[in-house]
Amino acid sequence: MLINLEKHPEIIKKNAERCKEKGITLPTFKQMKNPALIPDSVKENLKKAGLWDVNPVNLYRINWHNEPKEAGGLYNDVNFIEIPREITGTKARVLALAGKWFPCGVHKVGATYACLAPALVTGNFDAVEQQAVWPSTGNYCRGGAYNSALLGCKSIAILPEDMSQERFNWLKTVAGEIIATPGCESNVKEIFDKCHELDAERGKHIVIFNQFEQFENYLWHYEITGSAIIEVLEKLGVKAENVKGYASSTGSGGTLAAGDHLKDVYPNIKIGAGEALQCPTLLRNGFGGHRIEGIGDKHVPWIHNVKNTDMILAIDDQDCMNIYRLFNEPAGIEYLKSIGIKDEDIENLQLFGISGIGNMLSAIKMAKYYEMEEDDVVFTILTDSSVMYKSRLLELDEQLGPFNFTEAAKVHAASLLHQGIDNALELTYYERLRVHNLKYYTWVEQQGKTYDELNRQWYDRDYWKSIPRMLDEIDKLIEEFNKIITG
Ligand SMILES: Cc1ncc(COP(=O)(O)O)c(C=O)c1O
Picture 1 (spheres, helix red, strand yellow):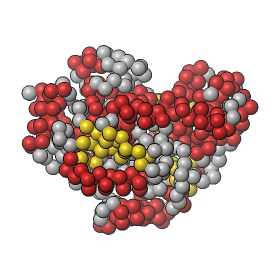
Picture 2: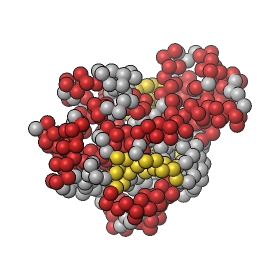
Picture 3: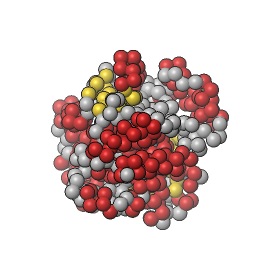
Picture 4: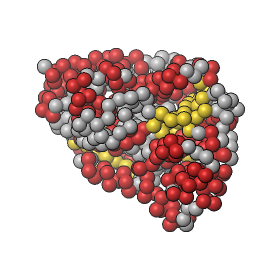
């Protein structure tokens, strides 16, 4: 079993008592997928809670259906946008789920919940005695620290020291401990080293929830992100033959797993994995530092189903930073209005964080590569939102000088309309195998995975399919746990 569901009854009892004391029950996957199943009593409490409040009722906001409100919101249709063609420069429609409306403003709060909940309800994590460790290059440790706080357990957030100031400032308000590791975005090896160090020092007092290897992360995105996209496509009445692409960068490879669900439903869809051109690990076995916070970490995550990936899209981080300025600087907004971008689309620009911009660029490259037509759709994900990176605007001003109207026109032309199909690689069978083989160096040589399991990821046809089959069992365990709490 790729997800550990072995039960430890004494710890389950202890965890349930802790939840009872704090008035906590846990949402199931079914409820995250379809919030109509959430009881009215929870909805009454949601009306009184802010989106970012450290209030356990916000566990029931871990889904893509939240009303876009800072406080008191319930549920609506899936939060998504269609990015106007004046911005994408593509014939095809580029659609994107919007992560801003998750509690604490990031979609990774879902994957962290998916890692924590099964461990809690099986007793593989002791919420009273142990600390939850969240190693991350981006929002995963934010979501992890937040969920730990909601559940009243202690947490340790590990992230590289060069991450944005906003992240550190906010983490200080929720995480028990924050550990900054050397380097930037792509220094994941240093994070793994820190985890091993903590393990040696604190042993059974901690549980490390490593997003890069935990299939719960894969499962959450497969089921919840994947289903949200399918719901949008069905509501819009997009014909199956027009569902052409899914583009998502790989940080941990979790978000990419939504593509596996889409391919089960739309077998002709192409799945594109994005990374930073400055750290072209998938594209060229390469390495390097870059500024797309949250993605591309000089290794292939254990939970990336490489055999199902059709294309690699390497995105220049300077394009992302330029577009971030275009979407957020007053001169950029003025320029976009002057070329006829509608007010509601201008309003939506706040939904793009830096990796969301990278994802949009991956979608654009895919649409152009496959020469998609007007009716064709490529889907992507806005993982968080602009509010997470405002300090970067000041840094960019200092480095590059103020952003003006002329600069805005240049960025629009060069980084968006002229985005080409360079650094996009359609994968042959053996190119996929080349990428898969890279896992050996990180996971077998360094991180204790077996050669046999690595081979099963490639050769065993049931390996990846077995993960979604665990959903019912996990939901059953969550329901049983809730029953112990509610009596
Ligand atoms: C800002 C941001 N974008 C993208 C990602 C990548 O998502 P995933 O880890 O699911 O691949 C992350 C991951 O934490 C992130 O923080």
